[in-house]
Amino acid sequence: MSLEVLIALLGWGTLVGVDLVSLPQMMIARPLVAGTVAGAILGDLDAGLKLGVIFELLQYDILPVGAVRYPEYGPATVAAVATAHGAAGALGLGLGAVVGLVTGLLGGVTMHLLRRINSRIVGAASAALESGDPRVLVRLHVGGLLRDFLRAGVVTALGLAVAWFVPPHVTGVLTPRGATVVAGAAVAAALAAGTAGTLRLVGRGPNLAWFAAGLGGGVVVAAWLR
Amino acid sequence: MKPRFGRALLRLFAVQGSYNYERMLGLGVGVAEEALLRGLPADGSASPYRAAVARGAHFFNAHPYLAGLAVGAAARAEHDGAPAELVERLRAALCGPLGSIGDRLVWAGWLPLLSGLALAAISLGAGWTAAVAFLVVYNVGHVALRAWALREGWKHGVRVASALNNPILQRGAVLAGPAMACAVGVALPLAAQFLAASFGAWGRAVIAAAAGVGFLGLYFLPGRLTGLRLALGFAALALVAGWIWQ
Image (cartoon, rainbow over all chains, first blue to last red; front, side, top):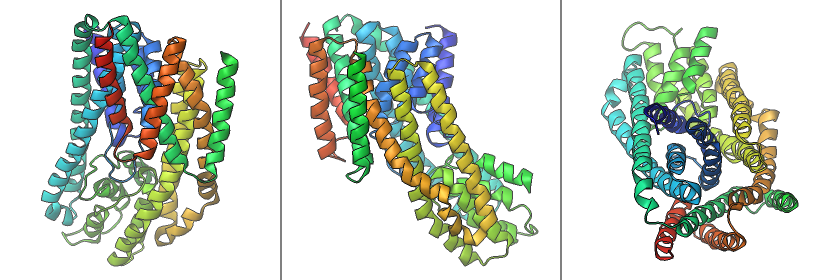
């Protein structure tokens, strides 16, 4: 991975991380988009699409309502694709998923920490905010935005560092068979999370029939295409 | 008013920029509203402008795409000289409905609907174009919703509740659920086939069994077991199994 590619991935991962909550929520943070663009940057669209689909399914397990805590799969997908690019075949897919999951966990923890830091800063500036000074308000708001940029950059950098460090060390330990097991586990977990998350969203009302109809149609198309 | 409206709309894209547990979206809403408050008298530290800016930054929580409705309505109410208590009550009253409608319409409707269609398209071989199409179509709805919300809020002021009865909004929320359920339903088996294509018959059978066990765990142990925990658990088991099974 050249320095230019690394910088491009770092920049992309940071934008993706900021997009999730802060700016502008245009859904480049969705793993499908984050993974596809990361794959394009690396010249490995196949890895980008596959890991994008895996993490998109995992994303279905999350409904970002209120102040709920959740993992951050955008920069995680970027790190996952970088890992997969550095290790060939099934090893790449499985290892990429593992690195992505750890990065996603880290991203979720940092988001919670950032919100707590923001709360402390806003609490301390309460009196100044009550004065109605717009400069104080804008300064606090922009400060929060900049902290999220920094947070997203750090998470992406850590994910990319793991992506750079891990594959050479694991290649000798896992055989192709072992790598296939890890890749299969990632696919199984993604499918389970995608199905369970969708069913929770669909509920037991009339939408369940629509889900069943769609599922049936999908099974027919998948069988027809085999 | 148009430049101020445009500035408020642009600022709304960063409404969650300083998200915190103290005031939630409050600061972002305040910053967006400030652009619309500039016509108010601003002389002195107790001016109507400063009082309105302070109120605008109080606690607020709703769906970020619909926060503009509260921003526009509160700013209009301030310009119309509504009492401070009424503006505060208006903001508080909007939190629940804007959160509920936005979550149903966007997080549980528009977003998973388009994500499901993109997943299905990628699984059928559409490649990167599916991701680009998802991004473009999603954001047509996204930007239109943000702009509509701010405009309606400004138009109706304290009577903004009538905007929530907009037939497109109501009908959209009703239709989004079934469309999303159907689209993701189609996408799941296609995505399964796409991801499992490189595995042998035995491998596919094991993946199906593991996915079934994982699904049951996630569905019947909500809260205790999450997708991330399941995936990390599966990955840890698989790494050990892969290391042993040379």
